[in-house]
Image (cartoon, rainbow, N blue to C red; front, side, top):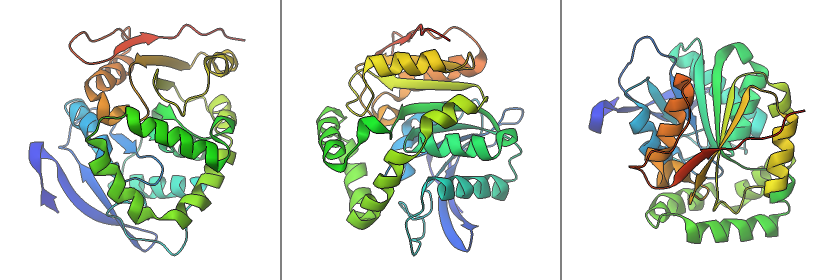
Length: 275
């Protein structure tokens, strides 16, 4: 285990016979740990700006899922359910009874699957820029959306993302993308009764159109809150960490989510109709 800045440490643990790399902040007693779940074809590195800001309130863990980043490669591409099982194995390795999951992009359906499979292990879920489903089908459309998003992200994001994408490779990308777009994320969201916060960005080209967001809000139960950060694109964990951490902290504390004037972006909670 190596010590890095700000009390964070880095090490590996074994998941189903493979080494999984992780970053963990200092222990904070009395609060459920926060586990961050990264997106498609990328490691957990880009989640660190937000995780660092949340480290004062709880122990934060940022793993590279099996086959991603600095974790050991597998012989095949793990799908969403298999990645969810891996997350549960990580919780077991840390002996975490219950956690708060903060997923970004593909990390959102993975988090929903964890809560579906083991709802007693999840205190709350934060879905940041959820991805997958009809709006991201087919492959050509998704590539165009990613290209648009790349132009809207913080330029420093490329230094993090490009090496991860190249390491993940086109074969893994094709296999996992197909499953991601077919995964029943909406069904999981509607059936899982774990308190859920969805945070979306106004400049995220992978996000469904407003009418679809309103429809999901109508179908979702009162346990679901949707917040919008104006000016944020898809990887807001990296580009807008201050505003995102403020939104998450407010929601976890049960206080009104309002904009933090000292952070980039403008936050408002969407008032969505219910069934």
